[in-house]
Image (cartoon, rainbow, N blue to C red; front, side, top):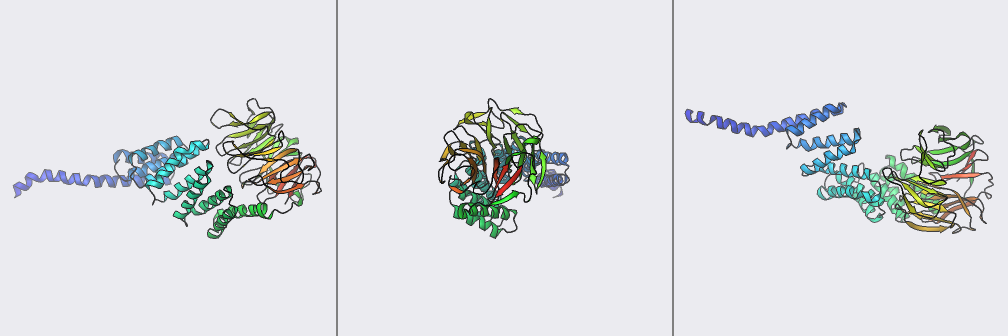
Length: 487
């Protein structure tokens, strides 16, 4: 017995070692993964990345390997801001570890990065494919709700309101008490408004307020409800509140341009100072450098400000950049894809300046003013045919409204346009039997509110206006160096 045992002992030891190796590798992989987590939490990023890379080399079959890949990809995306490097890691995760539970998060992150890189709605197809993979392959994953939300945004960007609504509702349904739920309901409500269902929109916005009263989105839902009710349902007659901010008269230096930023900040350009300012709490703060001859203020998504002169673009304190052959710029907006839309009173087209490509022209009537719409499109005013033209995100005509439609008398000219985040448009107009005044239109071109300045007892040289977030209008009077608010 002893001799027999001695003869088989080496083989037995080898077998035991072979059986123990996977467990040892698994233990090593786990220790390496959490060692990387410790270093990452301490912001020792090179150490964390090196540790996770060692894990991938030593234990590529460990369940911690795909987790390490995902953590490395998140670092590249969220800390290093290197989306190309993140996508390369996510491609490996998708190819080698698609059966891993963390693959759902990887596909979601890949779709999110691809969507962020899109420069027009047509570029969203690959991102949408990744979101669909999450939904189809991992329906029970927490990432599925976020994937539905991503699909909702993508379909809405493409002007497909029905599928967008379905995905936002599904994102809410999957986790009605999760952190994504109030945003999903809010986006569903906004989509219903785009579909022309105002009552449905208001119901969902009210649910955001009722079900998530402590969420910051409850406040957003409240003002979105209030402005819709005020302008679309109540439609009160305009009344003059007087100089704005209250009690501030003749305190500016020939203000000629106004613009409202995405967070509601007001931007103001004073001609005598060749300077733009941000107005917060009644205090003016200079923004950017001095710019002579400003024609248009363009707030950016980050609440910075670009300024256009008659033929060039100025960003911050930079030097003017000529905009091709344009020489009489009258309006502009920056869309969510980073493309600058510009109209020129001498050019029968909208000129698009993509962030990463060659400028191109979209045929349109010659325009004297332009404002953004929440659909991704624009509304432009053409004195040539005396109409307002509503265009979609691809620049295609949707509806045209003659200057006199819905008014007691027509006007001849548009001096300025302004819009709000819910799709209402304010026009500063003059001429014809109507005279000088303000007209507010709904997203479909319906007249919601209107008044003449004479009826309000106002006289001056009014050059610009904005719609504020409570449905009021702020007017810029360069003659009296004052802002006025109509409510």
